[in-house]
Length: 272
Image 1 (cartoon, rainbow, N blue to C red):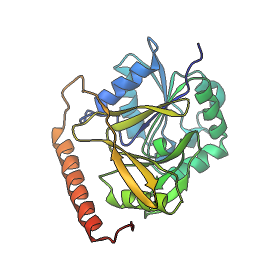
Image 2: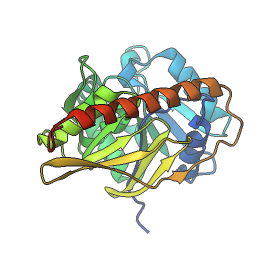
Image 3: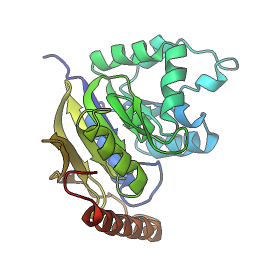
Image 4: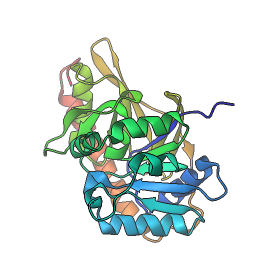
């Protein structure tokens, strides 16, 4: 049987005990389908920060995995055969940060081609924020400040926008980009949600936090239509540590939705 080429794109995720993050880490281990999976973090997009690396190692070591990290910013100190190391993994996880920097740095090191080879070999590819959008044809990045359309690597068709309701300016720019033809139709991913693709086809969306959803944005007769998808709900296996933070995020989402609806009522028909 041929191993499917899989990508799990996450709208926003971290290696801590906030609501939903534990459940997503458990899902990654489950999808790895290995008794003790090797999981490699590529924290390139945020400059290989030590705190992110430490949280990653802790989160997956306690799940009886083998967490590994490739720091492109420290190759001079710790040389690595990138192709050999990455092809030996069960899972490759791309962290968030600057999408523009991520594309540029990966291409300088030839990682765009190596990671495509890994994907074709059936290694599970995961990513959050910039590390999720990069696999699509395009996405909305704030790398230069204001949200703007940017090209990805194109392993997945269409486009993606992360932090979908917590960052209303990003969402609005996404919808305008689709209407203007800058981006193809795509997915809006809220924090603690994800979309699983097999062989380039969307097979499932997941939500690991109450009220968090995945949205499909499609162009229909010159207008962009947003459709809420029905996602499989994941539950944390342990009680989350800081529910207060999740409450704040949910409040911001509620205010963002209300604000977007008010602006929508003020627009003329057919205009974004």
